[in-house]
Image (cartoon, rainbow, N blue to C red; front, side, top):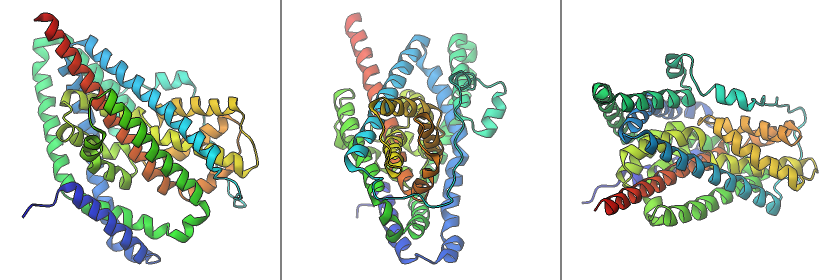
Length: 408
């Protein structure tokens, strides 16, 4: 008898969790005592491996490129792709917001107040990329600084050459250990997914979601369209891969992203899927995806576009074309500094609203359903990282083939 695949087991865990959540609505104490701890343990296991995996794999990825020019070329392709798809995502969000008018007929709960997120100057964002204390960055999990530190060591090891091989060999072995731990954690993913989804469904039953159903529909339709159209076209035309193969191979990571609402927490699983199911080399996956988990937030950007119009409509305000362009630019640039953790998009939303002078109090409405929206946008975020890995891999393979052809 053929054994059930891990992706099928995860899907079964998701479905059972939804039914359990509906059945246990109102049984808060039971859920907190007997179900939530398993989800927390699963998340902790994933978080345990994130920093060592990102640091070791990115360091080895940078060093294994063997050519600083090639590393720069890969980085340019990756960041360029991320910025373009993020701009497309927020534009799609604005289009859906204009078409569906999710804020019409809704009013702000009285007394709800939310403080604005403080806009960080562009100069500070750049300065904060470079850690003054790399060990502190590793301890606190500052992913941008960890990435920069890992890249510096990887590039330095490449330039040193022979003498640095023991260093690279150590981190290569260490990265393999983190991959093995990831496999062990994935073995209990169906249980973890069940335990994570059940409390969410129990707390946000259908009756609670109905008043904001249009917002949820708009975000989910936008995420499905962005993934189904933009990513499908990208992997087909730029990555020479069937969209069916792409989504089928990456499905386990999408389910984990959907339930954890964290790009960073999903990173070990997403890298495993792209390497084993999509044929992306470890060299590319270990460079492109950790970078994407930090700076690529297509789903979050799409959510910003919809929610900006939602807030404007709640207050009966019209956003001009110029203001909507400002939303696109702000959401695209702000996504670079948004942490890949649950709820970070809500903080980012206050910055986007502030950029076009919209009232921040309306964030209270979105906050009530933010977890439901976070599920969809995080799934799109990690899927975008995988699509970039496929595209960069194919592009690099073409260059290798062309080089060999010229040599011959």
